[in-house]
Length: 389
Image (cartoon, rainbow, N blue to C red; front, side, top):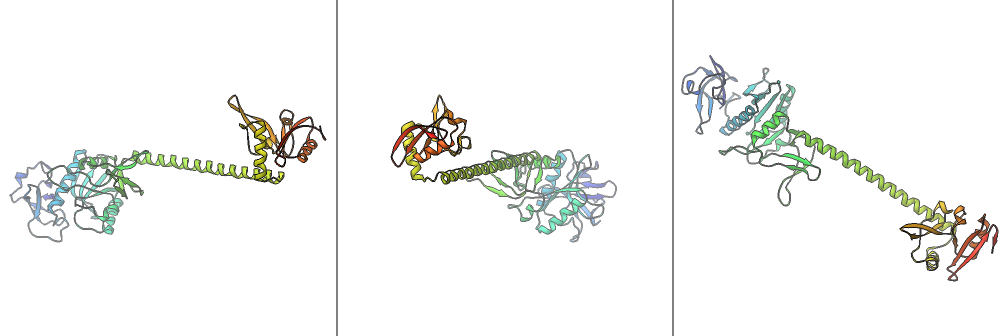
């Protein structure tokens, strides 16, 4: 049951238009023996109305081989709604328009004033994924964009393979989209939008405000727990741009975090190496150091603490205390060499032998504390180059 027929005098008739697209009233041809023929098979046709009052044309004789024969009422209704949506946007709409070379025949061909063409295909009969891909490719080859529509209860498996929308069935009210149209935000990710009228969806597609998002993303709906959909969907181009920008930002943030983690790991390894060299040079163990630390803190203040070995202080371990809201070095433990700092702050060693080694390193007077874990004592000494006194 096609919507179009060829009139011998007036040319192409379109039953979805008030004047049939050529200034002729429906009454002038309905129930009249108007000279009508099928544009596809050239068979004779008549003007009819369905039980629902839907105007259409029908073949006078059964023509099973005609590509425009055998359409269901549901198919006609969906085509009519798609045609109305296309016209509402201001595009020229041709129903059952065929390519000059016969490669395709569009249920609804919407033509923009700038020449862009968009096929809106109502597909209610069973079709394989390979077949719908092949038909889509024919449109693409001719520079025609295409979107397929199905209003059955459940979306068909082939709908994920081509640009398509699952819409509500005709039930006396405006159709809505049941396929996934989504918006994006950095905080919530992809979320689908519900209850979009078919007219709006078609208008957005034709105007380029909706585009097919082919990348594999998870889209969430409403409900607890959230419903999730994974596959192609439709969205506004600026949401795709926003998602890509956010993806770039997060990738940069991840890389920066990786760099920070690597730097922290390198710093920990470097610090561990510094400690290993310190323990190897001084020849003391952790138990000895704990006793040494307890004696020093008991003598110089329990608010003091030793930091890691520092090259600034001759690879010794500086002893810090907090004063006036900032940290100050008050002594240096077991340095391997002395610097100018030794003229103004004491050195701390763990036995008399270490005291004499400091004297060998000294180039001026140095104050030295001997905190001996072996004796449990804390003594103050003075050394000058090569001499203890």
